[in-house]
Length: 465
Image (cartoon, rainbow, N blue to C red; front, side, top):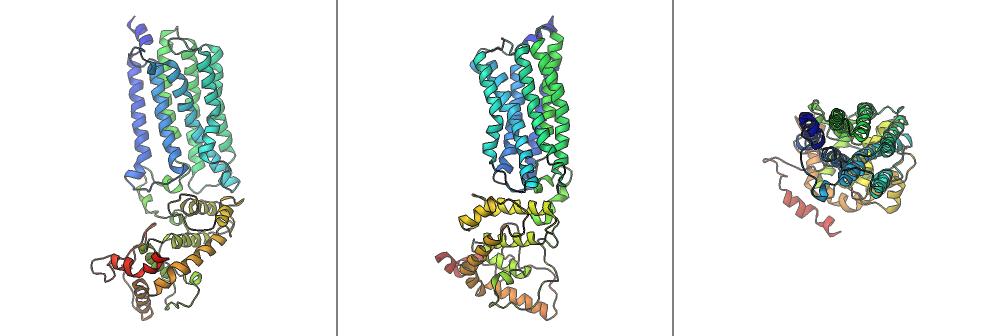
């Protein structure tokens, strides 16, 4: 009798086991999602690459909590409106839980399809696409809420349960279909392989989960079956949310960092992650002769030592975005035109970092050049950033070049060039600290350590302009 009573009121031993599994799973999910940012200090990205995974975490929490609340896992009396079956079993579990979780994964697969198959940015932004994909769930939840087919135990009859189960299956089939459309792309960071792995595990979980869901809804008069089915509901949902968050398929650099491969932190730039030759490093092949200020700036910037010196100066003036953009476009030019996948990775990285509205290092280019890049029909084409690069070089000539020739950065650069030309080998480049965002002169014994003097004296003209 006690077992039959807990099947109705909740609090069976299996219920507590399932709740424990779900709590542990969600904690693992939080650790998995925050580990790269907390431990490896990965910078937070803007746009869908950051907030889609965040939405997945929220949707996972909604799904697990709604199953616990609507299936009597814990003993409590439904006296208040926030215990309503229609709140938890219909809205939180449906559109805000399972539906939102699947919509995020479909959106990520959709992004992969457009970027790597169509070779263009998605026509629909993610914050519009997710509500569109989620719309059938919202309509279905509204219909159920209006018709009110649920009984006092949050169960519904077969004529309602089967269409709801079909809706679950339809979203899984859509995810599989979109992912299958990009199966022929050889991804640099194995996004497709991990996405398929997540789909395989989650599909098996969903098949059993839907079976348990149907049995739990229809056979609420068989006590042992109700206990077993709701146990499977919560445990398999816990497996599902972990499988769906197995990898962030939209962040290549982030996907290189896991709980097991700590050496991946050495990838500080996209060029290094893509294996572009001599990316982010100084080599002995660079020109050792003195720089002639009368040479065109775009030609001088092809020398990496000069480019890093000029970049350090620009960063000290808080105007380094243009030089960083030039540097990464130059890295892109090293990738063979036949290597479309790596070119697309690099192009998308440059767009997200420098071109897109609100980008972390958004550059000042004309609206026409920006739209030409954002609306391109081929992200892999060689001249994608040609017009933007011309504008940026002209901007650097106007705002930075004149002050650079009279700066201590240039004097130090020339001094090091003279030392190389005279046969001296520098043991290390202590002058520059090249980083993905800011470079600066450092060291207590460095005569150029006075950053405030540099900013006040060398950037005055730039500030006035």
